Image 1: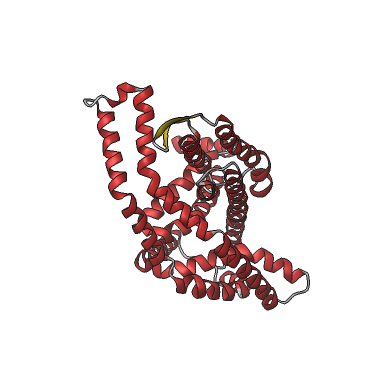
Image 2: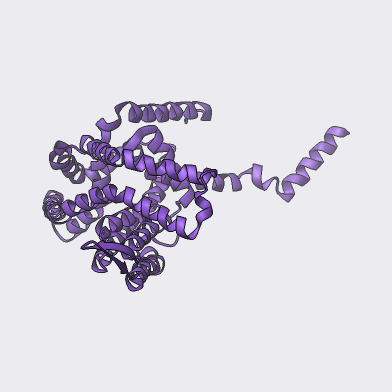
Amino acid sequence: MALPVRDQVKYWSIASVVFLGTVWLLGDVMLPFVLAMAIAYMLDPIADRLEKLGLSRALATVVITICAAIIFLIIALAVVPTLVRQATDLVEIAPQLFEDLQAFLRKHVPDLFNENTQIHQSLMQIGETIKSRGGELLSTALSSVMSLFNVLMIMFLVPVITFYLLMDWDRMVEKVDLMLPRDHAPVVRRLASQIDRTLASFIRGQGTVCLILGAFYAAALMLVGLKFGLVTGAIAGALTFIPYVGALVGGVLSIGLALFQFWGGETMVDGETVMMSTDWLRIGLVIGIFAIGQFFEGNILTPNLVGSSIGLHPVLLIFALTVFGTLFGFVGMLIAVPVAASIGVVARFGIEQYQNSRLYTGLTHDEQARHKASNDTDDQ
């Protein structure tokens, strides 16, 4: 006999509070385990496919690990140094970018720079902040990253944990299934299957879209000669994970950098003032790159790799990332997508149950007739 609903709600509520409290207390201690679990989840279909080809689970895990190590080394040696250098240069040049923007606006929109206006005061304050805090911000960010992703975790801990999780993934799923409450096991399995499909289509599919778009943007922007093409493409590709945000931020950043680099103006060469013409072709190419990227994302990549409906509304995703990131830091952002997917599936299940309940449908015609007859009898 199942426990009363009130007791079940109480126990599951306690379990949820304990889970969230553990995440909040342990924080960065859980980070390598959360990262390893996310990586193992993404690689599990590859391991399953290799098993179907005749490899054992252990051998499939070894093959995946070796391939991942080779790819990581190639990226670390070929891409990361350039990416770090461009990011550093971009932060250093930020004050000059702001000053050039001021000069452009002062020339074309002089009213914005009336010293008595609030806009002028705000712009000046932003400029001073960038000048005084730009280097400090980069230093803080890099130190935070190094403290977060320390060498031990990157080079040893996460790969080792991922290896063991990937090897035992199917057995762990079976163990969890055996621990489900027997009365609710079929419903929990159905909800878990829906959550898995949502996560698979979003994380694996959208992750692939991010990699493809990031590589395309970075390569194309560098080919047209944009100085910070690699870091701009990486930012645009990474933010594509959040619908519409990647295109907006990446497009604004790259077009702004293109205007800064290719816009004509006066410059000093050997003590003489030289007028430089605006390179409209390259500015147009930068705009065209993002237009092409958005076309392929919306019409080819997302429909084929992610699907037309994944059950994760952009507003729900952004809300989950904001809340969990604020409460639990980087670990919270990692678990935000699974939590958002779970909430979406459970919410749809709750709506389905409500629409099949008496509260929504009311009484049938026969039940209404019997109810009316019963009331008439009582009145007599």
